[in-house]
Length: 205
Length: 245
Image 1: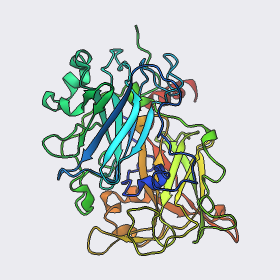
Image 2: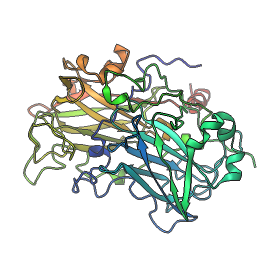
Image 3: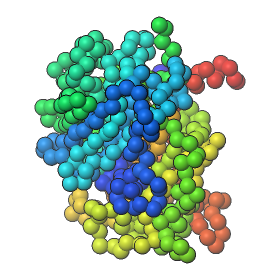
Image 4: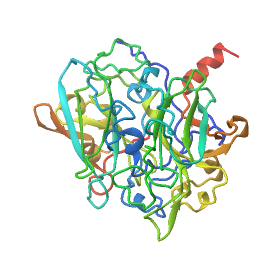
């Protein structure tokens, strides 16, 4: 175990606060002339390979109220399981798919939405292919350290049932908190619960 | 097929150093803090890769908040400052080509945001957002104005110290970080319920920008130095050790 002195430890986190949009999605706030577009608003920059999907949902607090000031980011592989990252050394990712999306939730309803593709399978450290998943990162007022979770797909029954994280790492009765529910062709719903009976599993990876 | 795992294995986040999810003096955290334990497993490519942005993303004025929202011939109101520093990892290695985004209130402590209700005036020439990409040595720099402190609805009379929000990417999604920079000498730092989510004095110091006279521009701007550290990659650390020194 490596010990890092307090002088070189990771900078401590502080909440993104209620106005995260100013820095991360200024166009969303109505400041249209600083950046051309909000970063991460388009994950598909041309014709993409694989199944195009829409993923949407709401983040709920411990009172069951939707968070209306949150920002989410997602990071995922393309339809063949490749990441659009300089560290991807296994092959060439789809050049028209960024793999990274950012969305400010609707200020009135709290709804978020990502237009993306269904990710392919990615190996874990042992080389076992994992079930298709998307990494989520959530920041908002009242969240002191960005919350990380993973979203799997309700219709990937075979892959989910053999995935080591879904079947061995997390409590079986909570595993369903990680499932995006298929609501129709190419449409998935994934709600996040910060507290309560349905509290979403969050990770420290 | 044998898996090829690229450089990986980031140092674990020290959760006693970071704020706890629940810090009741910061009231918004009460209903927004997960109550179950965070679950860990060995990181995979999903955590150890991340989006990387090119220098071509950055416009000429993106790191200049004094001018990037100002009308032609105008500048933002407030004390002109330079905020600069180095982005490094926990092994003190510089992180080049990494996106840094900032946002802040104007010199009166007012944010340009639809939900903002503070009575201080908006500055028509100040937007409050900026971004840059670190250079080959991990250095970054912003020109901006000193943000004002402001009251906020929490306790009966809570004030935020002057601060700038920072959003940091690194090169792995597990390094993603949002934090705030405070200003040396601000008496509101120790009274702030958000700052006090940090339990160690050193942690607060680490978020405090330090006046650096050497970097000031005479007759123009004061300068504050703020170094940022993101999670270190053990694997490349050890590889470099064996190959190098």
